[in-house]
Length: 439
Ligand SMILES: [Zn+2]
Image (cartoon, rainbow, N blue to C red):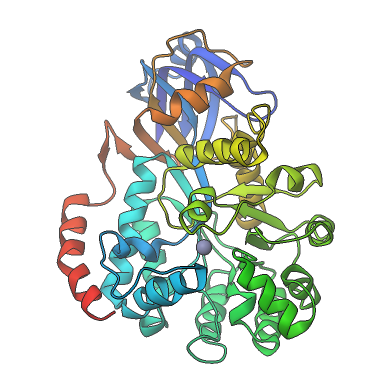
């Protein structure tokens, strides 16, 4: 199947980033075959299906490197008792109650809804972190089915934690990792770990062994709150990153999420082991845990990506929050203009290349046909030099019209094609109150 996405503003990203004002992208099957001037691509590909992109900008599909699909049914949920006053209470009173209340169909709906939201926001690849202790075995297969049906790409894992039972979740992770292996380009697997403060040395040792044998990385929350750092120092005499590194959790395939409360020597360990860090600014602000020193991380050569931590599936909004937060936290209006977009557009693609073995995040010949086509009529000239200004102050509020992943159109004219949004959300509204009753 060949498709010509024509007459849009094509922003290729990659090196060099090209802005083609009247451009087209020609896809053949799952790949981009050519990109360039609209008139010449039309002449060369007269038989292709046509998608008119006039009045729109064509970008590579966005990537989220840390998500929690399972958090869906927390929306609008009343939490009994006093409001949680700190991070650990937020886990105990909200997330560890919600995840335990999820049954099989809830897991499925909880995945399908954020996937629809990903497609609505042009997010075509997600690295997810799942928990559903009462319906654990087989839960990753349910999410995999939702991912395949919807047509996006996702790396999946189950959150191992000793909080309910020692080593809870190891078997589900191991089973899924063995089944998926290094993945098929659409679905990949990681070893999911909750966080240092809910994992014993014995559990970590088992998980690292399984991950190493399979050649996959560990995906873990690291020093999100000071409580995680304090716990590691108290129990093991060393801060979180040092402990995790000692246990073999770090490495080029690994993802350390958050890293809000780490010191410079821990940053050096992360840089030295080439471990990726994922920044989730909206979540950090929502939980009032602090601000990651991502500008320092970047200066040290750490690969820092951007995730939503389940807050939303809108990566452009997340990018702008990262930009605003760093300016405020550093009291410096000169910073983050380059760095916040870099997290989203370049670094997330590099993290995914490690997980999926695919080069994403660029519109170029031979690369995967993952596209976000967004309504955007630039009010000022747009070119390679000022694209980031349009991204941060314009595109962030624009509406995605069409989303393409693996060469398939998942949303066209703002209509989701691959999933029945009305039926799925109606069923979720039916089931959510039952989940809430089980809290
Ligand atoms: Zn998270």
